[in-house]
Image (cartoon, rainbow, N blue to C red; front, side, top):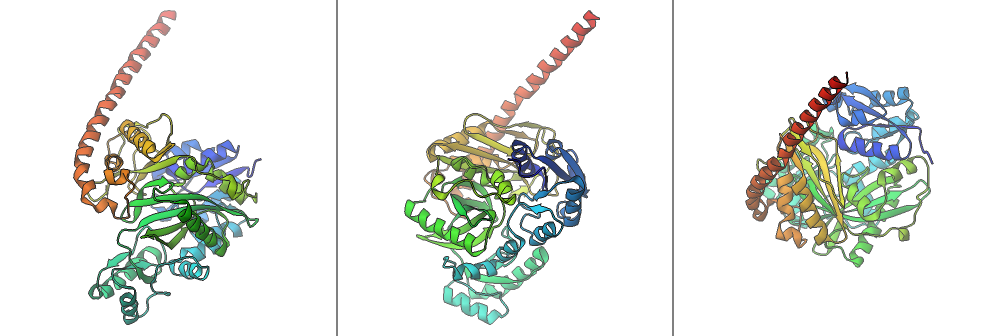
Length: 491
């Protein structure tokens, strides 16, 4: 069945290509948009049509709601897929699409708005019986009240911005003397980043695990979960390594957490794809937030369930009912995703945009690479530093770790610094191998002390493998010369 004739993808890079692949399999035409620095990007070439959307800065291109909807209407696109990031969780954009008669492939604008408030969503989930962390029930308006709450729940506490995400505005506070400064600082950052200075306090868990459940819900009242992912390995509150299922998950814990995730979907009147995020510590779990969009790490859920999440998103947006029930979905094997960022992990993960001089992605059984880059591609400094996602699947967790090591050893990216050496260090770390991860895993010495050696080894390996490029170029040049000679002889 063809759900739409044409879809505009309001994004760039690998996620734009990922959505276009699903569209191509569904025989749906695709429309790309591109900023001034993305004119020659791969997603532009891959699409059936492409239109300039504005200057390099996101506010003038990929965040330009009116311009994007105008392009959709002029190109004849009936729907817009936002990918993730940019406008994916912007309720105003979802509302604009609805007002202009363009289908937004995602949840309803009112749901995005409700779940976009950490305070509001936490209050809503508490009423629904979903476990939440103790803390303030509303935004902080009184420092003395905040001090009282912090003393009651016990330090350390964390100050969070109610709007936004990505760890922006978060500050950990270990005692009362630092609380007031943390609150005012977080409010200032939140106002600048999100236009909303509202912040709140909740209990800070020292070494929790970050576990999320993927949910799908159609417009006919039917919702399912697609099991769990663990996303504990992070830098600056942003994920670097994800795996599905979680290494600590038991049937009993999965039953409780998945029931809570479906309660979240029901309480928020959710439709389409979303992820319910929990913090887990000492046998207890707590609702953190809901991401009202496709997740970066949807790849590993697709690996272990065999369900194409983007295809399901498109079908749900077209009004179709989910074609399966909960009992039809099962876990098949184990999967890991490594986010490959153009960053230097030995220099506080500083971004390293630039030109890719050599590039070759890995392959073989159980390997998937989602990427929008290629040899000669110039990575612009204007956007997120993630350039590729390397995913591996195998029947068991130990086997998929070995497979991921092999895949990393095949990956060649020269000309820029990347997180590949860090991922290799993680895959060889005994604590990771045993499943002992948490959200501060990368801050521990056992990772950093091995990283320099792995970085040197990885760079040497890439240089060795890259030698095949120059040899191949010589062969190609000789072959071309011979062909020219033979053509001349024929003439």
